[in-house]
Length: 292
Image (tube, rainbow, N blue to C red):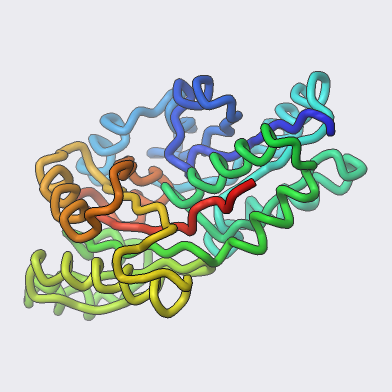
């Protein structure tokens, strides 16, 4: 079997430093802030991003430039036999379809995976792909596995503000005003294609309970697991730079799923954070890689 390189983007939350340690290659996502181009984790840190966000800067996301994508593939194919490329969910961005189009010129040496994931679940997919590559799987076989298991993950997230959803046109101004007035804590779910409303809670405590119950329900009803999420990876994501609430949330998730020692806690990708704002917390699950 030939050597296979694993590529994903910074929406996975994998930093450039971590990428070097993990042996995974990361394409930084581009952002325009007040008209100036930045690249996540290269010329734009989490702290700088949230400073701009707090200052109500005009922030827009963008797809990686085509030459940046093909340039990395060309470089890797000089030393690898094939590339598995894992972009963010096709339901959230057109970068997946663009990569699939570009890969048509590579005679099968580049396999683009529509993995339906983002943030820590996308990170887990990249780690699974790396493990499969090390086990000698071909790029085609890795792509097939990741697409077959794409929907075996779930994200629940609660927000501290509705301002950014309203600004992005994802909820009506009236709904945002009502939610703010009533101090509602919306809980959203992300299962593959889209970010949907899950429930509204009166308090953060109730929102946290709803998220944990959402994961438990998915494990039993969708993933063939149990309420303890046996055979699943449990992970936590958050937005913002204040980790006080995040540390408390991690403790609560560990108590809810006591059999999980390795719970990854990662910042949400900036592509998600610019639409939901700081202060969000999330819990996710992904089915563990089966024995290879």
